[in-house]
Image 1 (cartoon, rainbow, N blue to C red):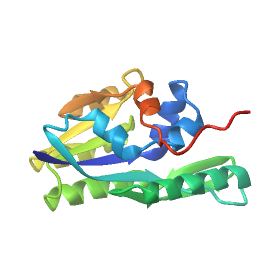
Image 2: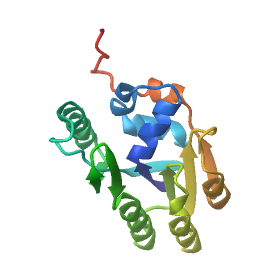
Image 3: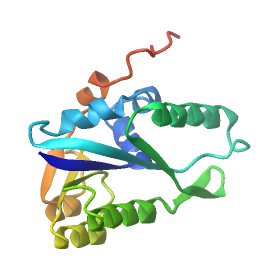
Image 4: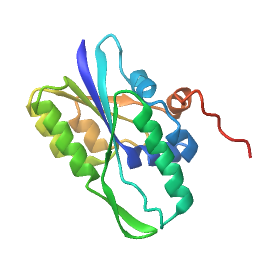
Length: 185
């Protein structure tokens, strides 16, 4: 059984869920281990670790969104075998850009491949900026898969990854954290 690591571009995944008709609630109340396990064949792969990359909002920008995001980060930290890796946001709110996240994910992908920590790295993103890292890891003899919503996936990543693993919004809904209920309004 091959060892698998997931590398999730958090803001890209969040936007993908919203573009598929989901809400912020759906994106931030997901059981990531169950969700990732639903993407791969458990007979072939054993998930060792999930890395989730994002950038925290500043409290002074938007107190409510900051609070929700911090609660989400705490839920991620409470889930086993999930590592939250944070970059930063830069600019004047609301015109902000993420910094350091793509580089951090790429470095981790390469470092863990070089250390032989995984056999298969699975990137959950539609960001084609990862292609050089994907190619380098493949050159090291590792398998690299791309998981994403088919209608929103990057054509370029699909052509560079060893396999494309389609996900859909139903999988997101089926893998919500059980103890949390969506509030009725």
